[in-house]
Amino acid sequence: EDQVTQSPEALRLQEGESSSLNCSYTVSGLRGLFWYRQDPGKGPEFLFTLYSAGEEKEKERLKATLTKKESFLHITAPKPEDSATYLCAVQPFGNEKLTFGTGTRLTIIP
Amino acid sequence: AAGVIQSPRHLIKEKRETATLKCYPIPRHDTVYWYQQGPGQDPQFLISFYEKMQSDKGSIPDRFSAQQFSDYHSELNMSSLELGDSALYFCASSSRVSGNTIYFGEGSWLTVV
Image (cartoon, rainbow over all chains, first blue to last red; front, top):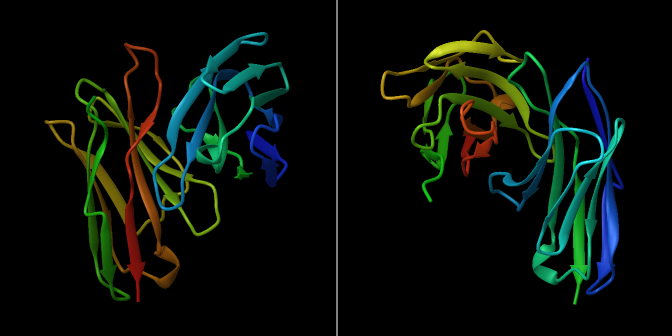
């Protein structure tokens, strides 16, 4: 069974203080690993899809990386508007569904 | 850019009633997914459709059913509602042809009282 574990559960950072969120996964065969941002009461907002180990993608202050066992979401010089829950999900080959982790709740303090 | 449209945004029903949620995927997307997210929980996969045929099934109760219509919109029907069905229900869509990125709608809040 596919499993996704995210850490830490919650993270409080000062504005400008860089850090990384971790997503560890086990999957039968990885079709894609997805990162989403979710604000309270809203739908997950797509950030990145990573397909193979060694792949990296960047968007503004965010950078996602992938190994065979985990993915990191690095946030550089965060701003208060980056406060949200960040969800990681895996999609295996031959299957439509995403299996989500429980997310990291990120709070950026001005 | 067009996004996934869900309706209604909020719905209050009594126990044992029936509810129907609607989803309009991004134009030209061929796959629709339904997810359920309870308070403080991660989204749980319910069911998906590819080209109007059911393609995968997750932890969807027997009281729930879904279908995708000829215009690609989808409906999730929930009967004999229970208090535990109170949750945020998301629809998502993707295109196998153009990269398989899965985009989510804003969700439908269902409260069962």
